[in-house]
Length: 439
Image (cartoon, rainbow, N blue to C red):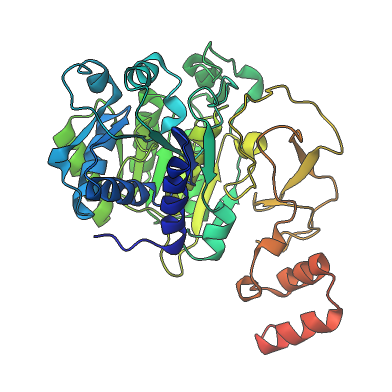
């Protein structure tokens, strides 16, 4: 049986209360790494205690296998549950036992016809849907699928309360944005990413790894199998053990690769569309992003993969394609809604929020510090601005340094920046620095 954290239990209670209040379909939003599978397993267990029949569905078989393990770990009788991919369920609707509750994971996919067919077939059955982000590429909201919404804790709160690891974010840009072209889905085509990235950047990827995270277990996100294998080749040529995996990699080979990554025989694991939506992979301390995207869902899933909490752990995100300029940082404040999203972005001084990058170490930070909190380099007062409309579902916290705790300030310059942001007197800086042996 799982011992739920307080915030997880609150999410369970809020979701069930919505159903008790007569809502037939409830969307639950909880950040990547917050333990959605634990919450889902607890809701399933409580439903069974009342004699209910649970139907769980998701779009990938790997996620089905993962939730089965979570259900068993939480005392759920999987023999009395329907746990299948959406494709299998839609082809067996007249043969499956009628559920008393339908649970959909990664429900940002649920506007697809297959999901709608299931929901229409069981139109009188209450539903819960889980996602880390309801923000779809098309701009279409989930209001046609869900009538109410419950939000879990923010990424910032999870970091502050030691449920997610803090992170350092670097962006050594190795892409020509002018070459990027969108497909009918709204995201960039593989061909245009080929042109934008080129094939000469991989040495720089390895160099950045060696400079920033040398020796750390790292997951690389590439846009194509060809590019992923080229990355792996460059790492291996540099004496850094690396391997590639994708959805077509045979199961036994993939399991062997994952085990080698878990035990440290492999330091770098490069993949295409595999290690994103809830796929169970060994813990890592860093990610390298080589795939530009217009999908916030994908950006969140990939950038936060290294942020599973461990004591004294600080994750590292290396963004070679400047996705942060589109979406902000992992702990940026998001304002979600079930409504359709206005995709149009307009430049406005009042609606934009500063994100700065250190010209020396490439550290990316929120707000307008005059000194890089990572390396101490002076930063010119001309921020890189990211457009965030007030009526859009994404907003960003405006100051990097104040998101830290005082105990996390490790240099005199960081103390100065913190004092400036908090409007503290110079004496506070002197006292803190002296007690820490920085003077």
